[in-house]
Length: 456
Image 1 (tube, rainbow, N blue to C red):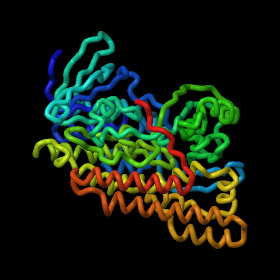
Image 2: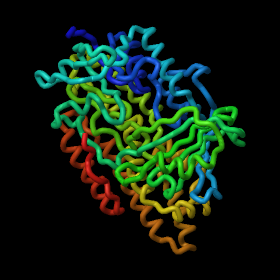
Image 3: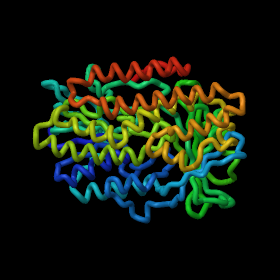
Image 4: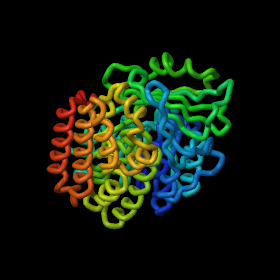
């Protein structure tokens, strides 16, 4: 086995890993990118492929026109019956997953990133309390290679290849609950007749069709091709492919071009995205929006923040202390919003179709307010006041009371992740206890069962 010295080894060539590698290379760091998939399969995944343009602007990245399949004016939310809709404004694009990833990969290689595709992360070696090296195996010929680096980035997805091999006592090794994931299935379908309004990405809320999640239809600019998918909360015995084929596929007459399934973490972020000389980003760090499941933009954001902080830490000597700015920066930029939306996510997963239908029918929430909630994670007093006026005329006091509870715990979660986030690693374990206590208390209050921890 040959020991290769690098500044950083990145594991996983999804959007998070590719963005991390690109930004690290731009910082002048010698970077190796390890990916299990063969070169031509990099970029394939089960995803809605829609990304808000603000995410690209935040990190100074502009995708070329050939990877963009559609430009969206916003999202339309559809009630369980299909009779009521909320149009949510917001610029976004639909990307071709493979072309987008291959473009990012090309930018990485052009800047000197060394790609080890078709390589499996087999084992790790911990020495002196830090990750000293990783062993990767070439899946094409079975040969092994040891890679050593000053820092390591786990960007390997919802079932992390690196993080799951680290010591259990490291807080970065936290195992989530089964209900912290949505299981998804999606198809790219070429339609016989174009969709009538391809300017909006459609999200359909129906807990009979997609329990604890939603199903979607994201068209291309011509309206003749559509990304169709469905996500359900994991751990409840629901099968996303079965539900998709039973409820969604019959609504669209067309030819399937590609299909795939996968897991999406829909919860608050890891309590710490750094420990020792390891950084975690993307799905491996749960940087996905807990409510709508979008993760590309936040993964790119986390990766960009990680690269900046790793570059600074390498100059100082890599440790959780020198990397700690990664946590602080991410929680301010996106993590605190995730913590708030995780509170809302649990409540939404318990809502019945008749309550969802009621909110749509009575126009309790406007498109602008939904946009504000999605971008800022803010459940405003204005919404609750609107609910109060409507519910005073209709016998639904329990709905209003629960929303008051939701807002209260959303506000408390935000304070924990912004005002009281640990200023140093020494304060981390006590803070984690406070976080667990808050979410446990809230779960019991609303009757949410988080289920067991995952078994990896």
